[in-house]
Each structure stands twice: as structure tokens, then as C-alpha cells.
Length: 141
Length: 141
DNA sequence: TATATACCCGACTAAAATAGTCAAGTTTTA
DNA sequence: TAAAACTTGACTATTTTAGTCGGGTATATA
Ligand code: FES
Ligand code: FES
Image 1 (cartoon, helix red, strand yellow):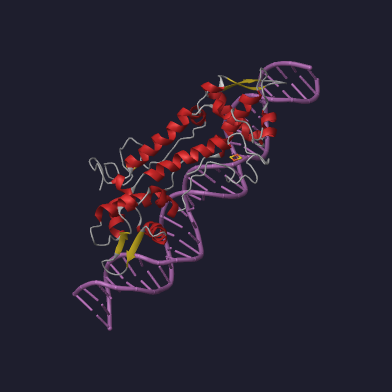
Image 2: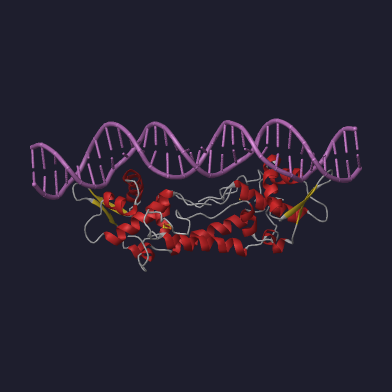
């Protein structure tokens, strides 16, 4: 079970954005330098964040990205959704047309994975971007 | 974020074992047929389960595997551990020699992933194999 | 005591997913 | 008008996953 870098970087970059955007847009170049993430990769990530209205862009010189909402209104779940990051613990796709045993009934572990999905997703639903901004001691910028 | 088949199959196979082992060992062939998992793959999985003392084997004709403990004493966490399945949400390895930003302090998201790890692992710690055996309606064998 | 059944175990591999990069733009401000 | 910065689709090397293969060993029972 592991998290992919795209989702991790997305959360990092947005936390950076939340921290450093006063009024002015923050350029990917700045985020790249501070968080040590490739600009080219960040571009890919921000494209998705923009399509999902989590950020908006300002083009041209002195441009960059700005959060579309307050950090306390941005759930981690939204960020993950924007990047197509899904929790996939089940072999079947919940709509049990064909269970993972090939039979037409739920497999013996189906409910367990279902509960796990719910457990993990509730974590993401309850965490906000603003939760990352408090207690800044002993952290990198 | 997804679970690999080895861990999923391990839980499935052990649940099968818990359900069908009366006194007699259960052969991988039987589990394979019931759960629709390749025998060759099951062998790999049971090797690890055996090394971790979750099951013991009986060789020869009419042989197979038997659980080493009662299902209510087998945590899902143990099963995952036996298969080297770890929850890896962090880029750094907790012992922050070098954080994921390359700096010598925790990155801005470190604590978030740490909490996520704890959240997920607590699920596995609290679930027992026996939890899969109740409420058998609407399930495959 | 032969033989079939079933566990044992390391090595190998095809396919999929991941983690990016590249190229060729467009837009805007100083 | 040049430089900074966003836009977008396509491409690719590497890693991980999900198995298979081959050649064993142990043991019950006919
Ligand atoms: S996980 Fe849904 S049928 Fe197995
Ligand atoms: S996750 Fe630990 S430093 Fe980033």
C-alpha cells in the first residue's frame, strides 16, 4: 500500500502555496525550489488542480498560481480526487457484477476491504489543507 | 493507493482455511479451487505465512495447511507483516536523516502522512481473521 | 515399496504502473 | 519585444507487480 508521488507532491505544493501566497500568485519555479520537485512534474500536477478548480492561474511575467478557496475549506480528499488518486483495496469494483473469485457473490473478504476503504477515505475527508499550516516548528519551509 | 494481490489473496486464503479446517489440513488445491487463486501463487504466499508461524504444514498425501492459532487471535496486521506488505505513505523513512525535500528538517507534509500511517495501521491491528467469518450471507464460499 | 499427492524454494519474466521528461507552444508584463 | 510563466499532449525509462517455471522433498496408502 503506498501513496504515489503525484498526490504527495500535490499536497506539498498546495501547502506551500497556502503558506506563501499573500495576494500575489506563486510561481511553480518558487515551489519547485522550496519543495525540491521538478517544475515539469509540477506543471502536470497543477494542470489537474486547475481543472478541478482548486487553484487558478495567472499567466505571464510575475504570474503563478493562487488558491481558489481558503485552506480550511480544502479537504485532502478533494486534492486526491483531482489527481485521480483512488483508494483501491478491492479486486471487484464494488458493483459486484463479477466478484473477485469469478462467482456471482461477494468474496469472503469483500466487506473487509470495503470497511478499509471507508476508514481511509474518512481520514482524507476530515483533513483540511489548513491542518498542515499549524505547528510549524521543526519543519522545512 | 492500492493493496497488492499477494496480501489480498493471503487474507482470502486464510479466511478459507479458518472456515474449512476442522481437524484436517486443507490443501492448497482446495483453496485454489474455492477462491480461484493459482496454486503456484498460493505456494509462494503460504511459504511466507509458514515462516511467520501463522500456519503450519502437513506434508504428503492428505496433507495441507492448518492455522497455528485461533482465528480470533490472528490480526490482519500480522498477515500483512508476514507478506512484507507495508503502508508506505511517506517519502522519507521516518528516521529523518534526509527529508523528502533533501533538507535536514521534516517536510511540510511529514506529520500528515505519519498520521495517515497510524490511522491505517490501527485498522489492521484491530481486525481479526475471525471478523471475516461472521455474517456469511450473500458471500461466496 | 511404488506412486501419487502435496509441500518446498529459488529463479525467472511479461505486463502494468509510476515517475518523470520533452517539445512546442500561448499569454502577459515590464 | 524579450523574458517569465503557464498549457498541453506525447513519450519513455525504470520499477513494481503478479504471477510462472523447474526441479526438488516428504509421506500416506494401495
Ligand atoms: S473484493 Fe469484492 S468480491 Fe472480492
Ligand atoms: S514525509 Fe518525512 S520529510 Fe517528507
